Length: 296
Ligand SMILES: NC(=O)c1ccc[n+]([C@@H]2O[C@H](COP(=O)([O-])OP(=O)(O)OC[C@H]3O[C@@H](n4cnc5c(N)ncnc54)[C@H](OP(=O)(O)O)[C@@H]3O)[C@@H](O)[C@H]2O)c1
Image 1 (tube, protein in one colour):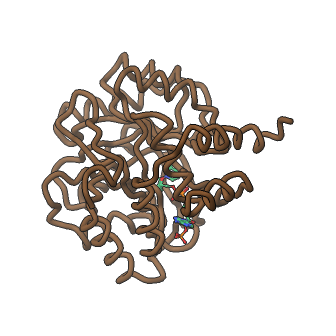
Image 2: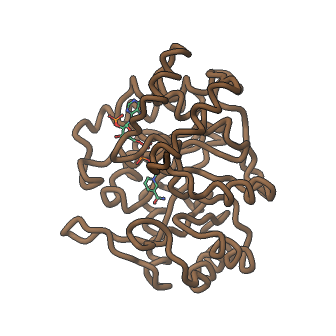
Image 3: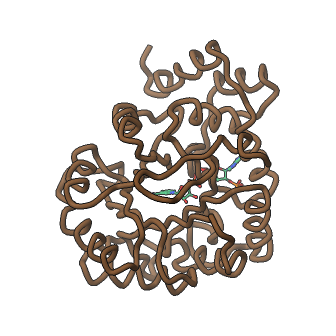
């Protein structure tokens, strides 16, 4: 696909890293419940190779998907990585055998997490590492993240991490981290129906920092809206394509990492970059968050 069809390029601030605005989120490549191997390992490898062949150069992953599964599939499918491919991983959790998600935020755990990612991805240095807070279970929770960010900054100083991002954070936590190190991206929950981060997105856009919504399609509960469906019908597109195109229109610092284990869905998602939304479409889509909140 041409540069423009994947949303155009974005440069992470203060870095030499540029990516297409439509990338890929690898979480769905693990088994059900983000646990264990995928049901179709060969299909997962083929999907990643197709994504790269289509021009995707930004892959979001974590060693706690599986655990270790998605990183190992990425390595199997794509290593040695073509020049320009940016792998973004995250730290801050671990998956004990009961399949739960537990915090892993001590200096020892964060350092071990970096080494796990390096080993499983087959890298000497990680392009971007997001410190992911556990939050409240319903989103980010205020509280200092200085200790964890300082550990990542030290690992960056050692050359094991090139750049640092944050995930599941508040605006105050972003500011706190920026007093310690440069922050190149923020990955929080955001989509057509979940727009608490609107002010944060605008603030990060002013600073040139990437905002990378997780659950861009609604995540485990895919977006459903009669407004979304009717706009999609009018445009001859699918609702998921319109949801992604709306994010691309929302702000130039938004990068997409839609997740899928299906090649047809991957193709559909990548084609969202070719959709143009008119002011009337945008106005209708902007009303979805109000509908979702039940505001009359
Ligand atoms: N930082 C964090 O805390 C955090 C949390 C969650 C996720 N993430 C990252 O964000 C990425 C994106 O989030 P996500 O994958 O959970 O959610 P998502 O992208 O909002 O949605 C994924 C879901 O939508 C389905 N889907 C994808 N494309 C579709 C299409 N064209 N038509 C219909 N259904 C479609 C997928 O199922 P199929 O497999 O059937 O297509 C999957 O169930 C993840 O892959 C992960 O890398 C980060």
